[in-house]
Image (cartoon, rainbow over all chains, first blue to last red; front, side, top):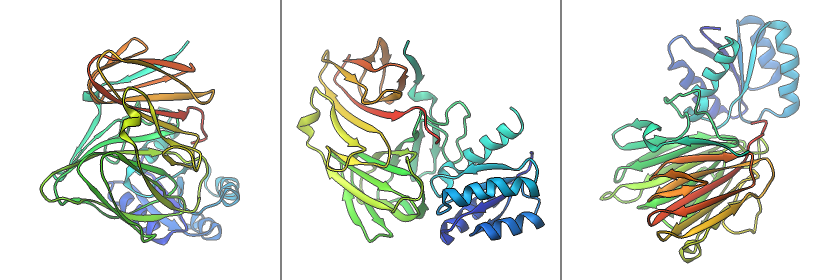
Length: 104
Length: 240
């Protein structure tokens, strides 16, 4: 996974907008946002998502549902829980997931 | 056998934005070092200096326990829960970001910098209700002994957080020794030297060095000069 196509799932609209803006600042990184499980699953059918980032307000059941359903739509898709709601941890979380996905 | 990790002050990340100088013990924002991601549930330890009158504008957080410890100057806090407060040395501030919170942190004084530690702990539960608190500490309680300033227990000394974590702070005269017994099995302690030189389990530490210790239940500390230290006890094995 070289250039991540990230799906951010977050129920806090302002935090979602902030995370998307921060991701788009990075060259080669793209992201779309979803506020619900249904929206996330629909986006995965139309977009070549390879990394899912769980943000604020996504509960354990919803997270598990997506961890079960999305790999069928996008084999090899990676998941990461986002903490902090801003730039503080975001880049390290994504870079760490990319390193893991690339086996380095 | 105890395991340890030494983070010398000079090896920390540095973000210099002009108005902000932030020395970062762990990967943060544009500073990324895969060897420096976290120490158990301790994820961020930033040693920040903010120029007079400047500060962090309105920005969001979620799912993180955020602790600020002022070292010099005054920091003015405002948040989306209508909290408005000023914190100064001798106080500690905590914010549970939970499902989401906006806040600003500004240097209240135009004429002098504010220096403070910004510490982030992973919470032990996601999506809690956001909360804010600050507590004034009794400085005499930290002279030549370790004073608890944070715990997981509401009503206990200091502030409390959504994590099985304990912070202790101490100001020691030269040659004074003490020991610290870990609160829980499986925890680690990250020692951060605020001022002076100390020896921890035989390891000499200087100003702003960090030293993590785990797989043990006790540590010994000796002040080699007049010194001030912060001990951060956190679970080492967490889902996050």
